Image 1 (tube, rainbow, N blue to C red):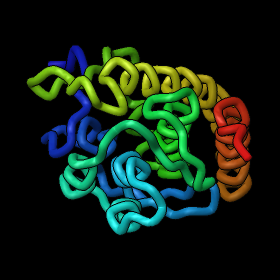
Image 2: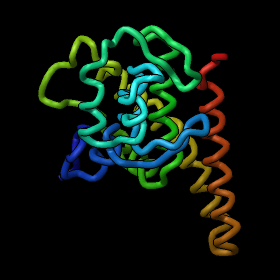
Image 3: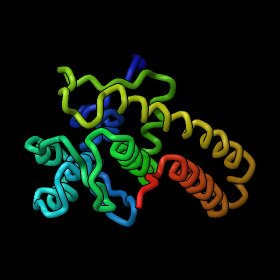
Image 4: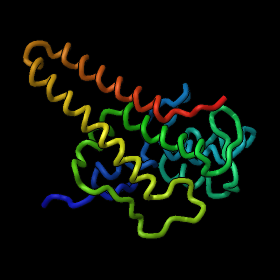
Length: 198
């Protein structure tokens, strides 16, 4: 029986739902800094650069990443430029979106997992309401995933066209063309959403 929706949550028995979770251990780079999940830096930036919890949080994933931010004041964030911004300010939310996007574009399995959701609804139901102080509301998270999925579908059309025309001739050349398309799309999205700070 085909799924009617994908409920994105860490530890789900469905690998697509699990891998798209912000808590999932996945390495990616943003502004020259390596992260191991989306959740780690999401929580870490709630602490100022002199707070040891920030440094620890930047390298975390899973439940440990989620928990490290629970005692933060949630009034301000200190982004990677070291500057302080209001909690849930446009700069804060743009940074959070960049984290999610880069995880998707820099990891093949995440990239294709999102594509494999097809036209099914994406939800984020954890069995309880959002905390009033959450940094990323469930509808915002779902909106980001849905938006990126639309971009990936456009890439998929280009992929299929290249595969149909080239694949039997030169596998290596085809792979390079596919990667070039994906990198170009990622850069296009990055320019659109990247923070304008400093």
